Image (cartoon, rainbow, N blue to C red; front, side):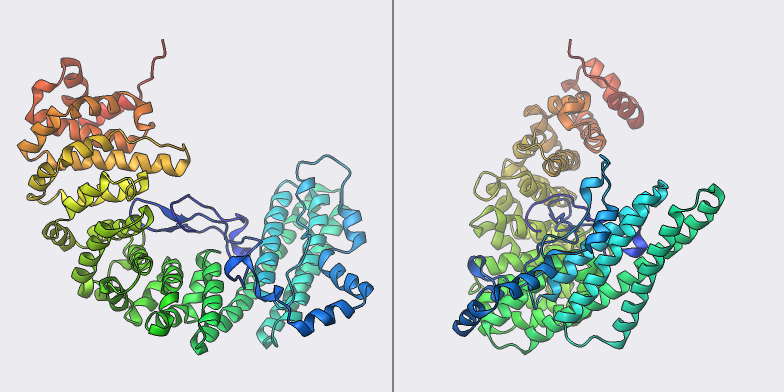
Length: 579
């Protein structure tokens, strides 16, 4: 997830009731800037025991084990591997495999290899993704009345469900009575689904098929609910085991590997973050961040906390354990590495994000806000890389939304000078995502009257003028969206600052009006963004009020004199001429 950015969607869009994951809003790191992880909620290849250098715990046999492996009969080893390679009975696969060229015939989900022994989390994630996707596909085929496909996929679904239950039982600890009951209900519904879809193949009467379709749909929905309940129970058990392991560990190596496993789970989406928060993950990670013996693990623990705090449960747990006080201590302690302070800034950016409605009442943050803001400005000034500056500036940008006093603090701390100087340093400010944070701070600070003089003194109007010409380098949707935000906020900042006649005259001298007119009249210059158009019209009208002589008659009559909505409609309907 985690650095700038992309808008992500879940792997399974299917019927929401039967998928534990379903759709979710990707976690946003900052007010207008990079989304940290637009990732699939259920990736197949999560490595739960990763070690430095790409090694794995399960791949390091002891000397005695190596000798034992060499003595195992090859046929026996082949039989053991065969169970993992074969997910469906041969006859089921042969009966269900069409000889047609259907568009989805190549999309059958059969795992080529199962998870390694003793790896229940990876097993659950792999099987969960496969079964959720199969449920979605069955729903699609049912809506199209493709009964042959519905039946064959139902048979395959039953095989996958049976494999998940049996494999998880083999590698996990003793399952609870509740899990046993849900497993039984799940398998009963799978059998019922296979039986009823087989009967549908033999029915030709449309009225009977219609009534049977409702029965299949209800069975499918109930099956999905049982599957979601079972998967959530199983994942909760595994998360509980990880949290207990972190709590009880005095070993740096054990804590590092377990925290890494927990971070991998946070990347699977909001539902898993909720489970981790409810099972004490936030408490355990802050316990790590309060022990000097684990200083080298602070960045990893803080990175995991930032991911968990994308959900309400995570933020509430952070409040309960005085997490903000811990973050303030880390940010203000220069003995901590820059990486540690940057990750602490990332947690602050996450919990103060204006996109999260449940973070607006963090009383503990208000108590530590002055210390945190001061430390973040210092981190921006001393940042050695673009990523560190991005995280610190994103936290500051969100804080300016969170509380209005923050803008006054920033003014007193000469934050404008720090931010504008950073814009000329390509090592710190090298992407539109970072400029998005800077212009967000400037836009929110520009409501203060005394901000204008600081902007002029630091040649800020010229920098804002440059932001009106922000262009994407890669053309990716995320970068294009970031450039649009930069243009929009630059225009908003200019409009607010132009209340001061000195700023307005400086803007006219730098030909800002010409650029604003170009953005209004040329859709390609603003990527056809309506938000940029409205902001540019507002800024142009503000400048025209101070220096009307800078406009041609046609521009005045079309862009300034009419009502704002009329000018907007005129510009948004303009067709570019290529003649």
